[in-house]
Amino acid sequence: MIKVGIVGATGYTGVELLRLLAMHPEVELKTVTSRGEAGKPVSELFPSLRGHLDICFSVPDAKTLAACDVVFFATPHGVAHGLARPLMDAGVKIIDLSADFRIKDIALWEKWYGQTHGAPELAEQAVYGLPETNREQIAAAQLVACPGCYPTAVQLGLLPLLEHELVDASSLIADCKSGVSGGGRGAKVGSLMCESADSMKAYAVGAHRHSPEIVQQLSLTSIQPVKLTFVPHLSPMIRGIHATLYARLNVEDVDIQSLYEQRYINEPFVDVMPFGSTPETRSVRGSNYCRIGIHRPEGGDLLVICSVIDNLTKGSSGQAIQIMNLMFGLPEQTAINQPALLP
Ligand SMILES: NC(=O)C1=CN([C@@H]2O[C@H](COP(=O)(O)OP(=O)(O)OC[C@H]3O[C@@H](n4cnc5c(N)ncnc54)[C@H](OP(=O)(O)O)[C@@H]3O)[C@@H](O)[C@H]2O)C=CC1
Ligand SMILES: CC(=O)N[C@@H](CCC(=O)OP(=O)(O)O)C(=O)O
Image (cartoon, rainbow, N blue to C red):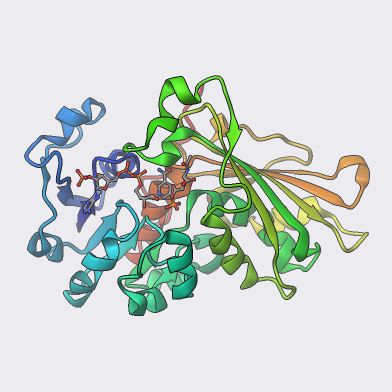
């Protein structure tokens, strides 16, 4: 059995890790932390887990965490910087759901996250965890940085085009909508029902911290310099990311649909739907799938790609377990192969 610790188990990504790991046949939960709820049974805070988990929250303790085989960090940015190093020295594998190790350029990270980077040498060592691009590296890694939720949907939607240099990489547009759980359980007033229900608005227009992450990763694939206009919106739903991606073709005769189908033919969690499909976020709710629909309005040169994920599953905790499965040589779909919850 794999001995697992979760730091930050009371947040939305934390409880999603608990839900999925409770059904994992190879996992034994050793410690799940919360400073605020220490001593309380998990099933008391989350009755959804009654009958599935018999463990109490405890404060993060270096010795207990060091006895785990793998520790997930489901914590705000900056927390893993301080705690990861001693765990790694003790041989523990780390899967970080925050943005602490996603960006390789330390000055760039500090600019976007507004704090000093606490572990630059680990950022260098960390492997970015998007299995559809680098599962061999993930399998061999000790420290994996899970992609952000928007970056997962955007990258999976655009990768085939950039890998084949079919579009103008300098004029990409990602128009994205997120459910309010993306802001976390401790989110501020904007996520309250009275503030977010029955309404929608853009935020951080062209200035969201996921921009540099997406550009960094797409640039690894694209020969041309990547320029992206990324506009996130807060959408009145609990879970889900909907990315509508615009890219201008620079070739004429190409079958985009079969290109995507071929690219993702062996990917267990990427579903290329029939040409012209409009995937709904509810078709992935609670599941680890990314569903993609491809459009070419009036046969013109502007492609419109719709890419949907659940921010708490493929956008964070589900993907984190996919990564754990790879790191421990387990079948990649273990514990995360459920269909979406509908309606
Ligand atoms: N929500 C989402 O859709 C996604 C979130 N992420 C990222 O995942 C991480 C977690 O997000 P989310 O679950 O939404 O966040 P939440 O705010 O819902 O939860 C944060 C958790 O971290 C714990 N925590 C806070 N500060 C500390 C600290 N200093 N030391 C130890 N534990 C701490 C909290 O418990 P306590 O304070 O009791 O210790 C709580 O359990 C964030 O970095 C987020 O950006 C990534 C992709 C998607
Ligand atoms: C709706 C909402 O607030 N979404 C969050 C999504 C980011 C997130 O979850 O954090 P990571 O940077 O770790 O991916 C935001 O825009 O900040």
